[in-house]
Length: 187
Image 1: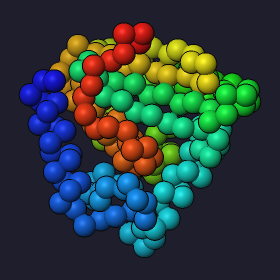
Image 2: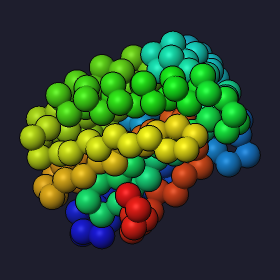
Image 3: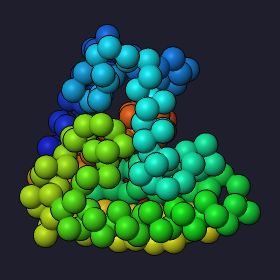
């Protein structure tokens, strides 16, 4: 872990722990700092439902039939989505279509889909767009869905990717670890 990535992680987690803003009642929910939320001030309790509804529309598959994971690695990270039912061929196909499209959009510096889902520009996306030539987005099919492995050798891009993935972990309530881990050998 680079010292910049460690400091970014400490900052995000410190702000999350210090913030009184909570977006939904969930037993594993961390309090979220205001800058990491896209909460409309008048209806904070509906944010999670709104993300799910917009996500289903933008992604083209049901959040109830699928599971998202966001993982941080020293050189970037990973977005993985899988169908909850391994026999759900329709969701698996929709996941693969969406993630292959997203990998290309992100490579082009286009982060419109996350903005539409979250109703805000997620942290890191401006830097990721600016440094698009320094970042690789490798799509792969998995047995029950797909993944995008995000890689870079640029420290500013790594920090932006980590900020983006941490936001996703919090806003999608995935309970994924915010720690920067060694990527699996198969990735």
